[in-house]
Length: 218
Image (cartoon, rainbow, N blue to C red; front, top):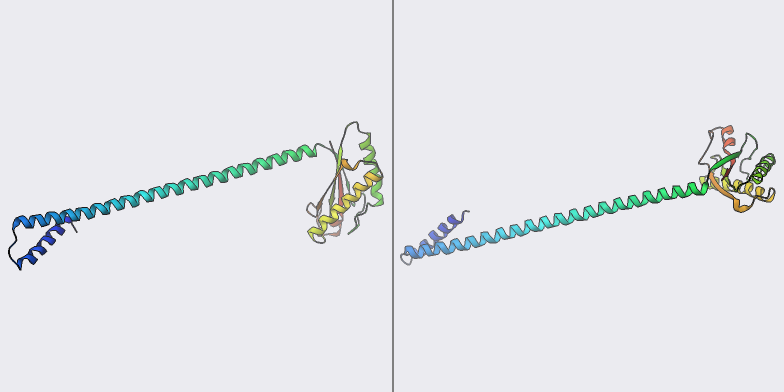
């Protein structure tokens, strides 16, 4: 309701009240209207002040939320950058450690036979390993060997990972004990069934996947 109308309504009501006891002067009426108008103005001013405070508080809250979101996004960006740098550093370190591949020898059913569920070095693989060791020892620079064990997909992934490691370890022991290659120059890694070279759905494919790869690296 308009504050002027409120004042007039209250004034009229006062006149009606005072009318029962006598006449009211114009001066008193005007005074009552002005006092009522002042009170109404005070209430409106208080409401406007509260509305301004609420608006200011809302704006301040929105700004703080925006600042928090901005800081969180920046933290995520910094974290992702750090992860990417760490991955790059790890890849660089891996390449540096691995060195340049000179050549590799694969012991599989094409030339030797790793029997199903067996980890020992087959007899027909020994001549291949002896030849590799003689070439390594005849080189005029330091190299090292990485022996990789692979399996078919028969059995659990965990079992095949263990079997691949056992096959690679058997080759490592042979190269050390029979051919004199120092153990510190031979590393072993198992890939289990994760890197097949043939289809595991056929017997021939599975036999090709049962293999050990020996890489000669600078």
